[in-house]
Image (tube, rainbow, N blue to C red; front, side):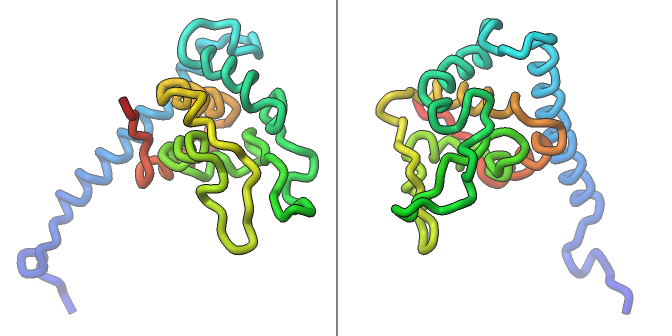
Length: 170
C-alpha cells in the first residue's frame, strides 16, 4: 500500500531539516567540548587554566574529590551496596555512568543531592550542594566532569542533554 504524504500530513523534507538541525547542534556542542579540552594543552591539571573549567576543577577538588576521587575514579567498590543500603560514590570518568545523564539531571543531582533520586533498591549517600554552590558553580563542576570523558561519552551525554537540558537559574 502506497502512502500519499499529502494525505497523512507526513513531510519528509521537514523531518530531514529537523534531523539535520539536531545533528548540527550536537556536533557544535561536541566541537566546543573538544576545543575546551584542546585549550587545556598537555597539562593534565585543568586548574592551571583560567575560566569555567578551572573553576569547576577547583570546586570539584574541594567538594567532590573526597568521595569521587581526585581524578573522578570513584570509590573502589562503587557497585556494591553498603550495609546502610547506600552505594559508594561512582566514578565520573568513562568507567562510570555520569555521562549517561543529561545536564539537567546532573545539575539537579549536585544541587539537591542523590537522595532526590532514591527508589526501591537504590539509596544515595550524596549530599546536596545547592546551599553551598551557586548555579554557575554547579555548571562549572559539570563542565569539569565532561573534561574527564572521551568523544563517545560526550556524544552520548549530548544526546541525553537534548531531552534533559541544563537550565541556569538566576
